[in-house]
Image 1 (cartoon, rainbow, N blue to C red):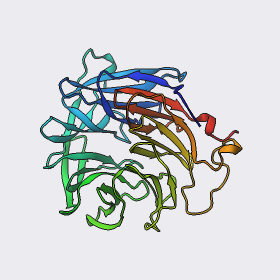
Image 2 (cartoon, rainbow, N blue to C red; image 1 turned 180 degrees about the vertical axis):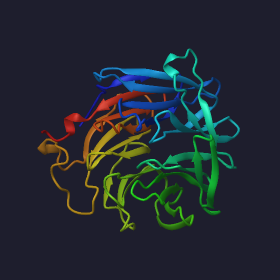
Image 3 (cartoon, one colour; image 1 turned 45 degrees about the horizontal axis):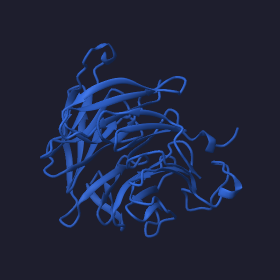
Image 4 (cartoon, rainbow, N blue to C red; image 1 turned 60 degrees about the vertical axis):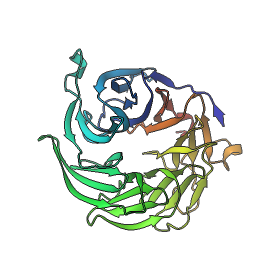
Length: 350
């Protein structure tokens, strides 16, 4: 099933790739996003869905000095977020704080809490532990994984430990296990590597090529979803990592992003360079598919693709579920268009 967007749109001034749910904002459904302009001053937009759910309101607009390639909101403080940025010649990473009175200031400035220095190559992403307050951060560049100790009150970050992926591996991203604060998955060109942060050693791997994105299922332990360039989406039980327990065909071009719903079992979003966002339903356990998680017409029960949102004009790189209202998600296409959609028609009828 496919169709155009009935969602709520918001346009950024420049091109963009990344958007994040503001999980710590428990009073509003909020997202934060940043732009990717080589020649102009870049911007961070703090967006809030109106109480009636009919409008995206810009709560704050802030200058950012460089192109933003990765952005993540702090899961326990709604005013703090991290970015990975490029000056055009090199990459850097930092943790920022939104000023407390940003809604009352004419030109509010972001405060840089800490610079995550020490990277030599391209920095790919910053990871916050998604399951609660934690003073640790992870940064991943092409060759290394860093574990940082972050002290927001003192505005400082220190490297606690560091590990190299090895000469034959180039890391591209990762995800922090929400069920185990010591476990991280890192993607590289030929595999997904699993690391123990206590020893900074690799514990296992999944041999897969060209994995663009990984995401843990926040509701079930041992479950991981991967998005791969041309071979679609694979769902893994990490207790049996040799073969995926389910496969989704993905997109007509590269599958770029994938994310599991934080509340509803089996609901997965994906997006790609075919200018489409897909909503899937699949079993995320190795057992038989159980009924009652989502509803769909009988003709669709064998098709895991519930809906394709295809009213985009550019590649869709950014996806974020709302933690506060998990039937809502935001997408971001490269042309700077943010769209917020509801999947309520696909949820169980009460």
